[in-house]
Length: 324
Image 1: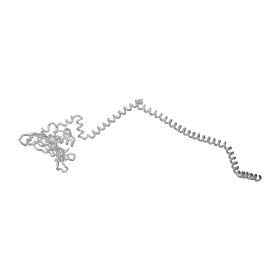
Image 2 (image 1 turned 120 degrees about the vertical axis):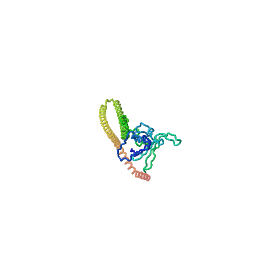
Image 3 (image 1 turned 90 degrees about the vertical axis):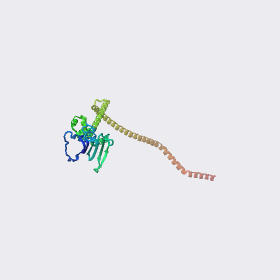
Image 4 (image 1 turned 120 degrees about the horizontal axis):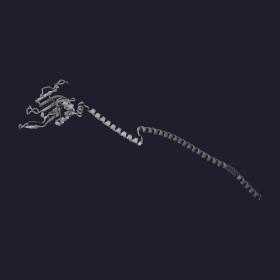
């Protein structure tokens, strides 16, 4: 955040309207706010802090107490600050709760606190309102700057007598301030993530250790080395059994092959015996068949002479009849 212009009206020792134009300083220049006691050096810092957060730089006086006792009753206390941030220009204006002269009747009325926040448009002429309520303005400023009022006072301003307060702060407070100052939130998140991961790894490791102990107890082993040796021995025994099983399977396969071959040979032997038996039967009936074949041949030959025999018998009968 770079302050550009500060306007103080009826604020602190300034009875009228005073303007501090920081843009008149050379770019990158260092400057000193100096002057005698009571001249208003701290009031300039109070004005910047009040404009941003509605609080003073030391946090010891309320904004209402910052009204100038030398200001005219009709002149209201007001603070305005133009500042640059991230390539944008912003304007914040605040008025503390105060009494002012009534517009009618000549009495006084209590005016509530007011605040406005604007952003300069790209045209460089129009101020676009961002917030117009005190709490909203403060929240917007905190979001823009990344600081709350206490952090802004301790980190950015360190007003008179407050540096010792930073040194005397607790470790947790200083850590929070330095984290904000150096933007270590990302590293803090990474650290927290690594811590959470480490805690998770430790928990999983402990669970694995408990499970290992349970398994060792169930296996009756005193240590992982003992169980490993037992596993190696069982592995060797299993390998031997697997070799025996393989040999048995091979022997069984050979026996099955031999059985099949024997069954095939027995079947062929039975077929040969049946054929031999049939052949014997055929040989035994061959003589009868030959005799039948001879009788058949004789019958065929006799059948051939039957007509001649019949003719001969007829001729003989006719001759006998003729002689008679």
